[in-house]
Length: 378
Image (cartoon, rainbow, N blue to C red):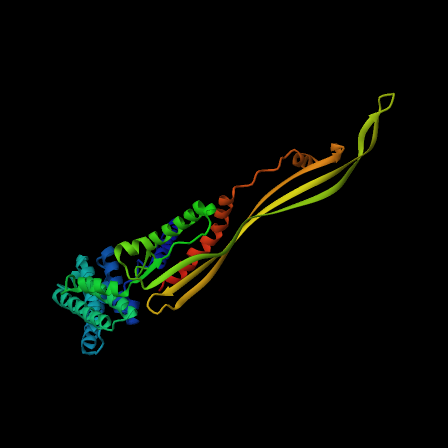
């Protein structure tokens, strides 16, 4: 008996948790007619003879149907440009409820042959597409970049609602190119053949970034070479120049430490017993820092007005470090770490072109972040 009671308890608890035992009655009382239909259908699919669900379903469906038809009439009577989308939505909800009922044999005994509004839905979808198309024409005729962008999305929605309606595809293409901002990126000028390879690599990184940029479909970057070849008239010009850079500033610092250690065996007696004493040494620690830094200037200029629309500066620094040591005196005064440092030789620093490349890395990260921030929602 205890096991049976526990089983009933868990079945009851499971019904509450997953909502599988509801008949839709509470949803009907709250006026949530769509939910009431769905819950009653679900209950009758698992329990076809459930009397409460059989009683709830006809009333719920009738209320839901009348509610959606009323909303359809109200939408048709409104002056909202996009009213047909509200009409379409409500026909879709009615047809969805009918599909649910048709999937349940027990449901059809109390709601026989529910009617789907197939032709009405198709008409409302077409009218929705036409409304979006007309709205797109209005935005496109305003002849601004912002309105062209709105027009593009209107024609896109028109295509989704009413595929191949009139010349929506061609209009969408017209809107796109009217909304696009074309940016020509000028190459970086470095007045030093010594750093040409590093400068070319930095330029290549920037070219890769602008070539793969895709966050905003209405922004297209062109290299100067591409713009010339394709005869592009830019909307903006993005120029990059190093205001200044210094490579290989060397600083060497020497620090002298006087060391001593007590209780070190320094000899032995005639009886061969150890003699303890203090050992001393002077440790010279050398630290070399080679600093390279630069400041990159970003300028974005409107092509027609020649006005600067954005100007930013990005600093970058790279410090190459080396350290070694030497000593005079007794090496037993040194720790193992200090002794290891004295065995280290001074390292040959990287060549200047490598140092140049290293200080441009943090500049590049700042640069692409700033360009992305500026253009992603442009």
